[in-house]
Length: 233
Image (cartoon, rainbow, N blue to C red; front, side, top):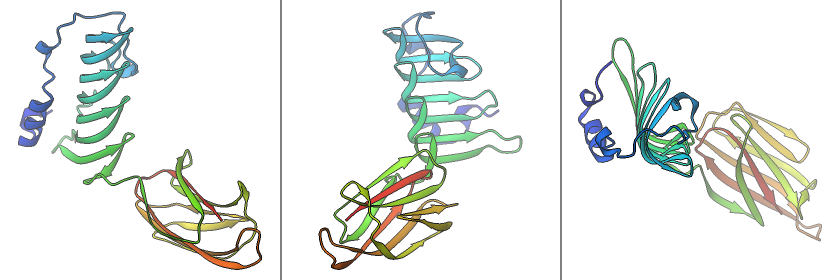
């Protein structure tokens, strides 16, 4: 496997900035200082707080991590080396790659480098885009967009006064990828490729009135996963 210093000048610079060398760890090995990730929980040397790895430290197990910890998890800046030789150098949040970082995938012929931004352990690209953005709305009292546990889908719910809005018609949905299905007062978009831009138009009545209005929302979701969009009229 290539030594970390031989990859690129950029990695050398990042390594110098993070500077998590062994001589900086002044606290001796602590058997009672817990590391929360199983694959690096064999031994720990570094700073500790309330029985957990906290601050700068080195954790060794099946894999190896050197950097910052918080409550037993890699958190902040650090270098993680997998047993197969892959290396991630960058920012962490509660044990997951999160923020700016560089992943070097060790291959027999030539190492592959993925450089950019990560969120919740998932690579999101060269630029740090927000999870979603709302481009425009019309005749919608309020909306909410939140991530759920479903896989690569968007569920759109129509609401009124906290319950389902059954007075929905003329629903027109356009999206960059995937398929759509209408289930009563819900629209489900599935098999999506992110980022996905969605446009939605529909007709509903005004509150406490039979007068019909045309409502619309245009939004973009950049982060893959399951999402729920709730629209209230």
